[in-house]
Image 1 (cartoon, rainbow, N blue to C red):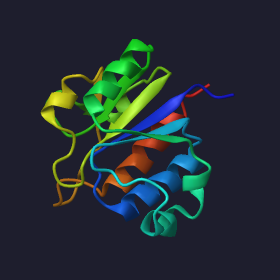
Image 2: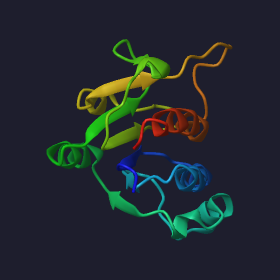
Image 3: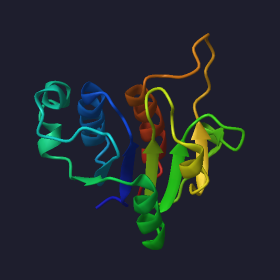
Length: 153
């Protein structure tokens, strides 16, 4: 059995993005998804449309307050890593993860709040080489998730 790899979704507003996240989480054998704040929750037709059944097989749990979840995860010895572009962030390919690990992905427009970023053990970012400032949250999760997953034992 692989080491635990959790995903924390912080205030992701699009139900289609939530569905896509479930599908990618299934591909990565994510241990559990934590849906926080305004995130939609299964069952919902818009989630099911993009999840293609993954919402029924990937374990998930809802938390109203992401900060309380982070506190709980850290108390359980889980390393908390934010995926965000900040001055403190390191290039994702320079990061060497240790597990168990929880990756936080944030709101499509606002990203992860500065308050939550302060609670992260590490912050990683994906380089943007074009004109846009960021990738879609589901694409960013896929890129970072596949990179991190290669270190799981």
